[in-house]
Length: 208
Picture 1 (tube, helix red, strand yellow):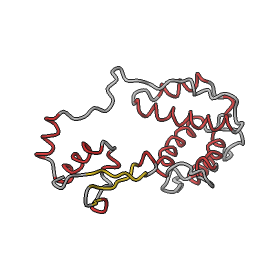
Picture 2 (cartoon, one colour):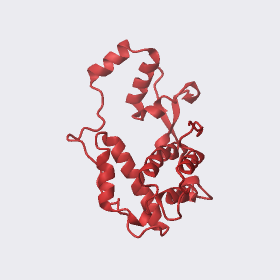
Picture 3 (tube, one colour):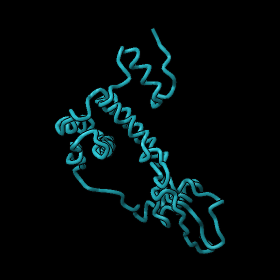
Picture 4 (cartoon, helix red, strand yellow):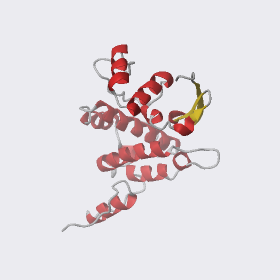
């Protein structure tokens, strides 16, 4: 029989209902589910006093990985996790490198926090390396021909993004947030999301 669980699978109540239907307890006090809950209640996560905590966007990304970890090792005792198990978890996602590496990175952060708060003695994920593509490519600038093609054929808004990208060198998330309110007489003000929205001024010539 269908049972309504709510519409947000990242909400704690969603998994409380799932676990209740499975006849399981919410979580024991020394499992990964408990560790995740403790981390999300900490100043390092939510912020307190001088500690700013994690940005909402970072919390959202972590929450996606916490759902994955909860489904995989949520009922496992934190001290029982082995390095071999971490390798297996990483390799199970190897078909998509960035997914595997993101999961590993969040797990390493979670266990580092756990070590600092006496949940375990050794961060078994710390020495597990990220997966690397066969060819290291990274982000490369567009060749001039590609840039010229976009500036000639793309819609106006995309041309503006490409133009600002070449001037600023910022990420797409920062570029698309720039609008008329950012303009000044001799340039524009923008913020850098990776630096906690630090304000940044870019001088521009009149024709730019």
